[in-house]
Amino acid sequence: MINSGKIDLKGLLLPEFEEIILSWGEKRYRARQLMLWLYHKRATSFEQMTDISKSFRSRLEELAYISFPKILAKEQSSIDETTKYLFELDDGEKIESVLMYDSDRVTCCVSTQIGCQQGCAFCATGNSGFSRNLTVSEIINQVMAIEADLGEGKSVTNVVLMGMGEPFCNYDNVIKAVKLMNASEGLMIAGRKITISTSGLIPEIRRFTGEGTQIGLAISLNATTDEIRSKLMPVNRRYPIAEVLFACKEWAITINRWLTVEYILMKDINDSQSDARRLVKLLHGIPSKVNLIVYNPVEGLPFMRPDGDKVEKFRQILADAHFVAPIRESRGIDISAACGQLRAKQNMYRML
Image 1 (cartoon, rainbow, N blue to C red):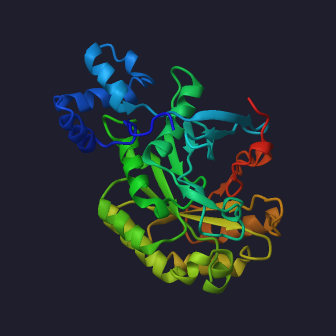
Image 2: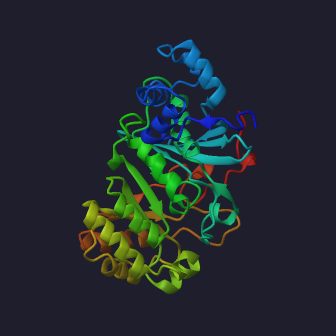
């Protein structure tokens, strides 16, 4: 690789950056100075850093590099302007990210792994194998590359870690990435506008609670009985519903934030009125809202979308129990950019 042996300056938190700068014999303030160039001024080369001496810039060229992914392809929905991006990473691996518009929000859905190990039966990513975890810079660079593509004056307001992969299987890199997104010397995205979604890894949910940040948590639930959830999501065999929701309740109460419960409705599997009533009981006492997501078809998988009236009856039962339970629009469904449809297949794009 071209940058073999060099340090990627993207993905370093300020204390780590300071440690490296000091090891080079430079002043501590250089770390913050460089971070502001990277994240605020969006420098893509050391030559752009005009308030840094030429001698130090030359040294930076020798010791470090600034990573940035290549946008290999992108496709925009003809329905709702949702845009799906295909990125090529330094080692040739590919990932997908999605940009969504909703009134005053511009939301970036980022990936955290190349593929996924969880094997959820209904998900394209989980059925396409697993390669590796993404680095901190590969996670944060998705947001930065999309913002650069949007053009001057436009920015991402919200970030959801709901793309390819299980974020908590890449815990350390994910936490560093969201801290950088939130940091004053980073992307300065408010913690309450960043959400991490998990399939329910209890040890990591508890670690996340201990972080004490205002970054949001979403649990991908998708069933109201362990029998059905274990068939849909193998992780449930290790971490059953009651235990997962207890850990989530601890997070919600400790952090004083509402838990987001994601519930994908699949025809004749988890969409009955009995399921809705069980969901109300399961969430009793947990500060939470429910995002109802109508299943997005995936080629080769047997699951189907439920009828609209069935979805509305399910929602009404939750509403009658005083839950905030919107039916989330399936954004980008026509370009396979919706929930559960990401798989980073180059042949699905019109290439740039």
